Length: 456
Image (tube, rainbow, N blue to C red; front, top):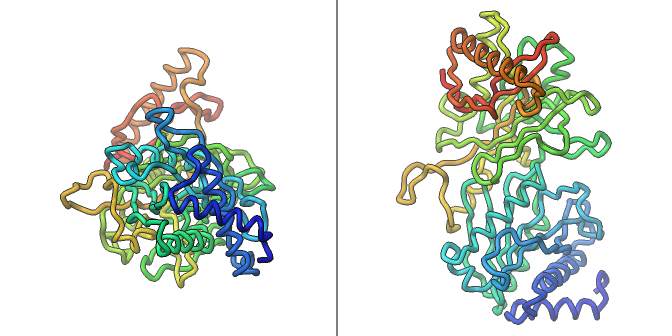
């Protein structure tokens, strides 16, 4: 009993028993949850005096969140977040965005038992959207659904919400499960909790340092454009034979664009620079593309060996337009590919939803992947893709005159005609949002972006 004084520990234990017994004060559930987390953290500190050496964390800081969705003012739903910090300190995570934070909902047992009919899943979706918008380096998240006397554990990933069976905290086994869950989360690697290890906050530069895969890269780029490509070489994957090269770029803290919802592709675009203090004249695009289950050996049938996604399309446009010549303006791919996660095993693995889901087949899904039938059909998963291209353009809304708008639109259509003629790529998703203005040789030009639907 060295970390927390006996009286304080007894107070925390009382809150624990009140929550487990289903009798927390209805107006202070977050306080009771915080006491439970604090008690478990105290026990963990005593059991692991050297836990900081292995990166252990505690979730003793529990913060109430503004209700994302509320059916009524007295509906009994309270949203909260478990904020991590080093186990033996009271300081929150050094990464102020805390991608390994927990999403939480406290509600009635009736809500938790019938999520679709009561709307509880809407709270989890809204809570995850808020969590992801505040933390650009989130890949997925864990959530706790607590009710008076019971608990469920949830995994929130891009196409589904997975939920465990209900654990009765009024029983010793249920309380043991709660302690095991919190302990497991405290000792897990950050990538298992949803953080992206290929994206870290560089406090000195005030930017995100993001590793972009170089499965495809610009052969015409000079040494300044591609500094030391391959200097950062992840271990070759035994499951996926593609070489794991990456280039680090430095992105502004706030994205240029973030998808409205985490669920689905969760596309984000950042203004990025080649160096920590350089001009942000590039665009880094990060998204989770839909992929069917397929070969996992890295052959031509696997997603990162031949997927006809935007990276592959832009790679073909660049190669064919370079061969044909002309002055068309298009996003020139600097590098791109599938994000790989160094899991600590013998090889770096492709970042897919399978990294987390393989061990969770027994979980019940509250939703199903987009495009998959509830009555079977193909099982679809997401593949984490990232690319860097240039130049960085400006939206049409920023142009000052109608003449400039018309000139940019006309030039973008001319560039598309050249791309269709010489590269044989049809964009198929032309809109005002997908046309940007760029300056080249002192002239205002138009550039089509977002070739996600491009077809050869």
